[in-house]
Length: 323
Image (cartoon, rainbow, N blue to C red):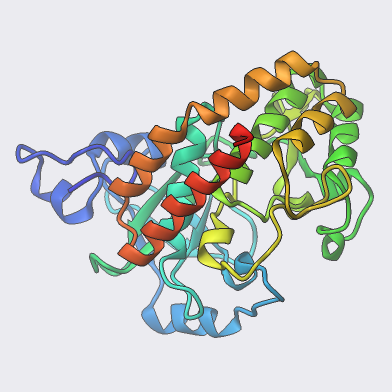
């Protein structure tokens, strides 16, 4: 058994609580700041009701994912309770339309983290103590502290570009680069980070990197200095939904399909990244192939999804190599 948070083994010497919950005690303390894993106070009936409310919009898998805001009450028996406003944690349960979306997102986020990209805190958690009923959970990063949290200003690229939420798929990654150049306090670093995220997204089939899945976040409360926020909402959409022919949610070099290595090079130059730096980042991405494949192979995905992810990564790496 591996920990549902850090993915490292839960050994034979682990406590009974660790074996039952699937979480190391140290991971519970780091993720929740509590001594024991909080109980999720949501009934199965409520989860079914939320699942029925989910609506699939076109070919967008995340369109069926229900995001549930949770508030953490600490104490002897910590609890996560359902609230109807943004708070400390977000839960994404299983969906009726697509199996194992929480496990897919967890794997994609693990790959991003393994590749050196900073991510929001994320994990899997069992619902109602059922071993096979896993949900994806993440901690909000625009709250600092638990009891009286301070707020960090966080604006997604829809807001920064003056667009409505429904226009999140309208735009280009060139335009995203201009947003970074205009608002980031460290545009050079963030442009390089953004470019690397596009490479990793391409390789793992994350075709849903739209304007609301990119944000700038304040460095400290009230500082009014902004940097590219850690990665969130990474999902191998092209593996889950192979009929989706788009490689990207937005256009790059005027297209979002049939992306090739030369497109990445041309795009880098167009946003002010030197060609030799871009080439080095492409090679850095390619160097993650064995690691990504091993993470996919060791994942808890069912065989069909595991195979789809592995084949996708192999094909995309071949494209990046220019073979």
